Amino acid sequence: NAGVMQNPRHLVRRRGQEARLRCSPMKGHSHVYWYRQLPEEGLKFMVYLQKENIIDESGMPKERFSAEFPKEGPSILRIQQVVRGDSAAYFCASSPAAHTDTQYFGPGTRLTVL
Amino acid sequence: QKEVEQNSGPLSVPEGAIASLNCTYSDRGSQSFFWYRQYSGKSPELIMFIYSNGDKEDGRFTAQLNKASQYVSLLIRDSQPSDSATYLCAVTFGSARQLTFGSGTQLTVLP
Image (cartoon, rainbow over all chains, first blue to last red; front, side, top):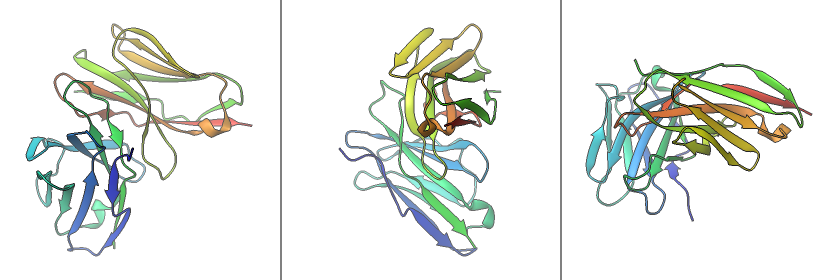
């Protein structure tokens, strides 16, 4: 029973490049959440998605960041024109249908911007 | 302002002792409460969740919730060196599904 999968596990980008982070939820889970953990800081919510819908993006920076969860395939968090301040661990979590809030986290993607 | 607060520690306990971790939250509209464990460089791992006032036990772990006082705690009995990690308290508020995390308490269990 595979858990939440994220790839890549480590990603290095130069300033101005694009970063694409992928997340496949646990089998049977239809809710995906993205969180960011900056160095020496706590986990912060970014965006909540269901298939083909963004439910809540209140934690997402207004510029350069976008997320999607298409009908087929993984959820993608996209960061355009990365800056050094984007260096962080990005975690995806998934949960089953709406009757539970319990979220299970993937291994994360560590993004380093040079 | 919806906030979750934890003592950052570090908290040190000897092996075999009870470790007590506390968390307070600012909003009475909170719904669900979670404890996650995070080892250095790893992702958060769910330990327990609790929805109702009172105690909930799972093995060596006990979660305690007091909504009137707005706190939730985690007790770890018979602490082991492998329990050394950062413990994160998380809360969902109102109808929102996302987790709001505290800053975490670093626990060290001394052999």
